[in-house]
Image (cartoon, rainbow, N blue to C red):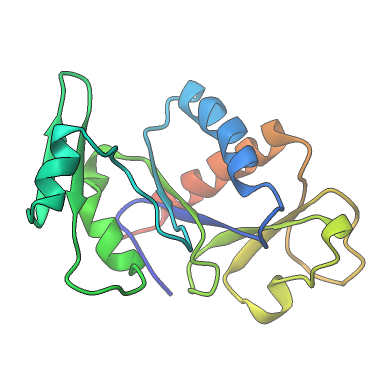
Length: 178
């Protein structure tokens, strides 16, 4: 089980379930509650973060292994890996300054063992994840789940109640002795 200095909470679901859509609704609610958030999103395809013709892109393409682009309001570090490999969650967590965060939300990495909420849409006709994944701490579904479980059940179409669940999860995490 992965652990972090701040609560770590993933969203496990099959493609098309609405992980990003839900996160876009949860993040403002959690921010309004005063939470400082980090997000790690795993992509299964190559993503270009920069645009051809921009200086930072051209410097990276010229051979720089790391390019840090900074403005007065944000910065981004682009790192070229020597070889293609799947990202590792612990290494990605090391890149976040967790001392400045109250919670790290993770989209993806569903096959790793760390606390996560399963998102389920019956219309996708995909199997439930929780029976095979003991790190699922709750299920958010758009329809009642017929399979027996003691896990909390959340309404996928009710982001405010899911945000409440997440705040309670964080409070219980911070109440634990280190």
